[in-house]
Length: 471
Image 1 (cartoon, rainbow, N blue to C red):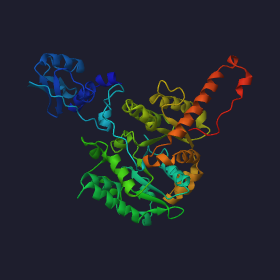
Image 2 (image 1 turned 60 degrees about the horizontal axis):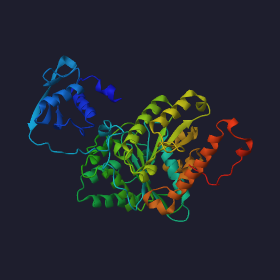
Image 3 (image 1 turned 180 degrees about the vertical axis):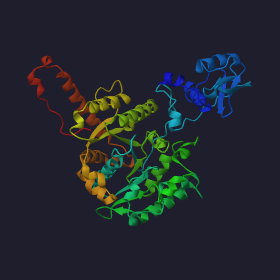
Image 4 (image 1 turned 135 degrees about the vertical axis):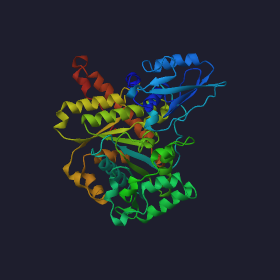
């Protein structure tokens, strides 16, 4: 992929900047005497410590066919326009590590071997879990999958109050927003939230307190006063989406803390005393979702069909996230592993080559660790197509109907397995996970023995396993 991009056409100055980003791991790794590179519409500036000749040789490797003979410009394809390069000689090289933000425009230029050390956010302490649902394409059942898990979470807690915060963060085609009736429609939205934490009139804490107070006024009780859902719609009017001065990427472009958006959403959930925060993200490769996608503290569910376009896009997303997470500490890697929901399946689809190819391609995008012979890089769940789920019109209706979906049993298992000891941090019980892995390892060894019938005897086929189910 890198070689292909290095050979791509240079049509505008933006292509020159992209070529520089690719060659320098997004301006992280320069030729020895280069201090900085800055690209503008009218030319590029390269800061150099004395040895300009070595830099010109380096530039020739980046622009083998487009650099002028004296290395003073790059020739663009359109109109053979010369894009000037100005060398600014400095006496001392200042080492400045640029901040790599959790945005597609930054992560697109980093390979898996390039270090993310120090780029990961600190772990959360006590507080609600944050769970995000995402898909590459729209119309694949992402929102209904999220609501299925929300229903399961409500059902899994019987002996104490349960509160859930639902956030419709689809800022181009909202879904949950249109399921709200007037009684449960709050006076604030996700668009308002972004603006209030980015430009707080007093401070962020005051803004968060205000939003929590407003959401309490319109909460939805499901099966009793102690079973409460707070819903933050994407917008109150579509006109808000048409004019968004503040977007998630603006909050993420903070050199002091690029992970502010996740932190703020979780803080809002904490002020509402929510057990968990569900976030419905916009489909696609969008900076509207990237700050949450790259956050390893957020639990991710990705929804895709077996359609080639959906699989290709989801494979790209999984591959990028895998590259980003490759240097996470070992004790954090397991919790950062996403779950993939293969949706809208039918018996006929499962017989087609597309089904097998989809599983193969998605598995290759996020492979298991070399030493992990049991589990895949992602956890798989299959969800059947059900016509009745295509016409949901309200939150209450979704909670009722989705309990009958094929995905519900998996969602309920997930909800039950969230051990009470770790609920405040949004982690699956380490004990249950270890038990699951142990049982999976036993099953794997048994299957390995019987891969070829002549290697064993029929007496060995009967084996006893522990009664718990693994996921």
